[in-house]
Length: 214
Image 1 (cartoon, rainbow, N blue to C red):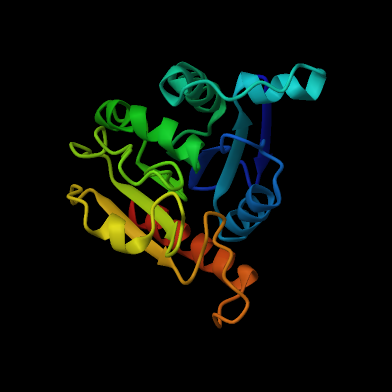
Image 2 (cartoon, rainbow, N blue to C red):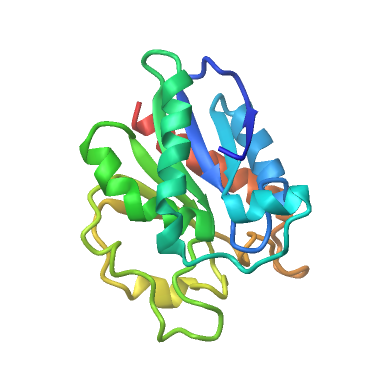
C-alpha cells in the first residue's frame, strides 16, 4: 500500500483497518484523534490511504476521488498487507470514515464469510449525498450478514437519525447515535454536547463492539 500508519500495540487482541473519507487523507484531526482514542482502549489501528489520495503527498494532481466501487480492490490489498504481518490469533475488523467505511462495507460480507474479518465499523456512513436524500447508497447493505457497527451523528447531512431509522436494514447492522453530531460528530455550541466528549463516546462504542466479537 502507498501510505499506512499504525497506532497502538501490535500485539493487541484486535486490529481495525480504517480508510479515510473522500476529501482528506488519514491525517485529519478526526482520524488522528480516533486512532489515539482507540489505541487507548487496547485496540490496534491501521490507517491507510487510497492511491489517489496518497499521490497528493508526492506532488500529484488533486483529482476528485474515484467511484467508491472502484476502490474495493485497494481495500482488499490493505487487508492482505495487514493480514500478512498480523500476530497469530489477532482478530481483524475493517471500516473507515465516510467513503472509506462505504468501500469497506462493499467487501465486508465476502471477507466475513471467509473468516478473514470479525466485523465492520463505519464512522459517519454516507447514506446519501448532502441535500440528496433520494440518492440512497444502501442497496448492498440490505442483505448484510457481517456484524456491523455504524457510528453516526444524529444530524449528519449524509444521513440523519430520523431518515436512517426509517430504513429497512438487516439485524446485523447496529447503530450508535452521537448526540447532536454532524458528519465529524461535532455538536452545536448550545447543544450540551462537546466534540471531545462525542469522539470519546464514539471510541467507547467501537471498542465495546470489537470486544463483543472477540
